[in-house]
Image 1 (cartoon, rainbow, N blue to C red):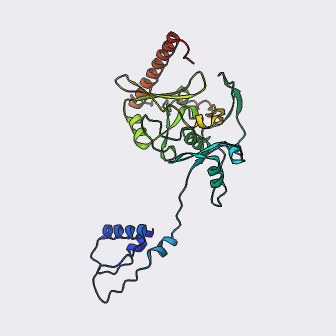
Image 2: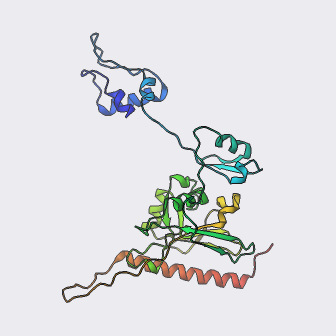
Image 3: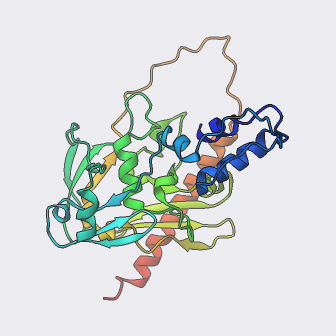
Amino acid sequence: QAVKALADTVCAHDGRNRNQRNSDAMFALLTGTIFDCQCQREDCDAEIPDPAEVVRSVSTEVVIHVVTDAATLAGAPGIGWVDGAGVISDDHVRDLAERSDSTITPVTPVRTPPARIVVEDVPSKDVVIVYPGAQAADPYRPTAACADFVRVRDGYCTEPGCAHSAFGSDLDHVTEYDHTNPAQGGATASENLNAKCRFGHLHKTFGDWIDVQYRDDDGHLVTEYRTSEGFVIPGDAENLEDSFPNLRRIRYEQPPQAPPTPRVITGDDTPPTSNRLAHKHARRRAERARNLRERERREAADGPPPF
């Protein structure tokens, strides 16, 4: 809006086209320099405002995501994590939280009671609080709280080698959501969702890579990718759960769905056609099951990891 408003202040005799005027207006706004009409006429009637005045008339906002825990905010020793910058000190966290324009949002929904509380079968015996993860009207879509939690937990795109921010990434169902038969797999849950940049999301959806996400024996979230040639590529060694262990105590799960309405089949119904997407998802489910059996066999043969 600011670029267009400034670019449109030239007179009708300016020789630049729309894109050229927009480019020059953008440069003037970014650098604070003067934007002039280039008609070269002495009686030019263009009224060019100061670029600073144009910027002040447009509402702009820069959002910085900061992750920390409640104890650090309250004054206890700890750390914070800033999207795009990394780990910061507890004093810096509190300085940012005390700004007049800061918004503090918990990763658990305030008005939504937990669906259930479970004790994880891991060495730490963590108590895990479970919240609804899918929208009631559309089970494929995660709730806003679930989407925010997954981005906070991952921090970055989960595709190997990608440092793109999770807050600017898509959320992907690791095991594909089955729109035809949702009970068959691919739940909209935090344990089955992770952040992927747009390129990584398209690579996974339309390519031949298969990713898995699971908890190891110590409760750490592990992501692995298997290429079409059979190579296994580990995901990031850690996510923000390692810096903020309380994140491991939170889950968002898809609530059970009501059974589908029975469909009356008449003689006029035509048989369903072959669905390429359904076949692709079925092949990936079989590949994941085979990978799981292989990993269990390998872990059984190798024994427990060394300490």
